[in-house]
Length: 329
Image (cartoon, rainbow, N blue to C red; front, side, top):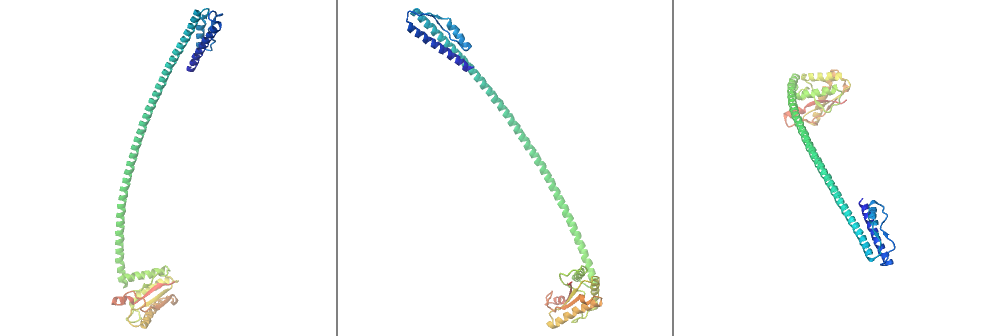
C-alpha cells in the first residue's frame, strides 16, 4: 500500500511538471499577446488519487490573452503544484506516522512475544530444576534403601558367619572328642593285641591293601612278629598277627606279598644277611602252614642296608631289627 501511494504522488508531480513546461513552451511560441485556445489541465489517472487532482486542475481555464492572464495562469499552476506537493507531503507524513505506529505495534508484539518466551523459559527452567531436585531426592532415597539393605545383608552375613564358626567349632570339638575316643579305643585294642599304636596302624595298612587288592605304596612293619634272641625262630607271641594276616590272604587269593627281613649293624654283613633272610623265610613258612600258597609269598633278607632309626642307641637298634610286608601284586 505504501509503495502504491508513493507511485501515485510521483505520478501527480510528474504530470504537473509537464503541464508547466507545456504552458511555458506555448507562451514562447505564440508570443505574449495571444493565446489561441484554452488549455485544459487534466491527465487521465489510473487510480482514484490522480483523478481527484485532475478534477481540480480541469476547473482552471487558462486563456493567456495578456501577460497578466498568463501570469495568473502560472500562479494557478504553481498553486496547484504546491497544493499537490502539500498533499503528497501530508500523505507521506501520514504514511510515515502509520509506518511508525505499525513499527511500534510490531515492536510491542515482539516485546510481548519475547516476554512470553522469557516467562515460558523461566517456567521450564523452574520445572526442570524441580524435576532434578525430585530426581536427586529419589536417588538419595534409593541409595539410603540400598545402604540399609546392604547393612542388613552384612549383619546377616556376620550372623551366619558367627553361626558357621560356632558350628565348625562344635564339629571340630566333636571330631576331636571322637578322635580322642578312637585313640583310647585303639590303644586299648593295641594293648590287647600286644601292639603299640604304630604297630596297630601298620597292621591295619597291610590288611587294607590285601583286602583292596592294592599294590602297597610302602612297606608295613610287622610289629606283632617276635624272634628269639639272635635267632630266626618265632616266639608264641607272633601267633596272633600271623593268624590275622593269613586269614586276610585267604579271602584275597589273587594277592601276592613280599616279606623283607632287617637287622641292626651289630655283627658282620654276611651274618646279618643270613639272619635277616632266615627271619623273612620263617614268617613265610608260618603263613604257608596256615594255608597260604608258597608262590604267593616272596622272602628276602636286607641285613642292615635300610635302617629306619639310628643304630647308636638301643632303641634305634631295636627298631631296625624288623620284618616288613607289602603287597606286590
